[in-house]
Image (cartoon, rainbow, N blue to C red):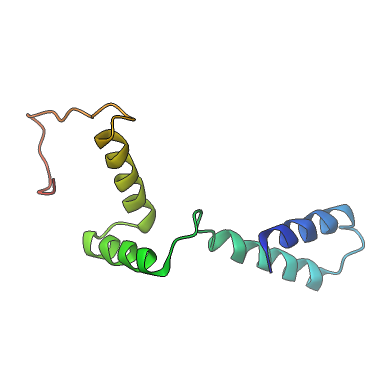
Length: 96
């Protein structure tokens, strides 16, 4: 079931909430929750997806955090964002 069809189903249910059965409403809400939980944002090729998941697990961070780091660093490297300055006096946890 696509996100568009679930959103249409939710809108229809909202319009007839007094008439819809509790069981049907539970099904619609569970489908919506499942779709929201599984939203990946940008579709990726399977090999890219696997690489991201492996690296995130190795770094012990979430896939989302890894994507944010990679994207930010790419934007900085290519001068789309200013490079962040690192305070030389601050302590690091050993990762560069």
